[in-house]
Length: 119
Image (cartoon, rainbow, N blue to C red; front, side, top):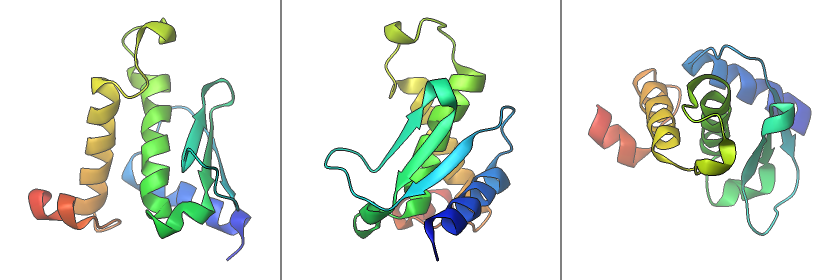
């Protein structure tokens, strides 16, 4: 499957878990940067998932993580000054955990560690 088709599939997967209030773009990039498996670009509301990280984690896991950033930024941010709040602060981790738990309960995604706790 090519990167564009994988991006369409991942976006549909994310929207099944939770339909966000603000649209976003999702791209699957066929490379493996040294420091990140994915990135959320706030100013463009764009998720990038780097496909060559799939050896370490699933593309679904990376997409959920970046989607949590999108939801945090567009719907749940409590402090409007982004520089005063950590990108991986408590609110972000609540959103990420909720998305992973819901995906597990819906049988859309399986992480054995989460599944053993949630189910």
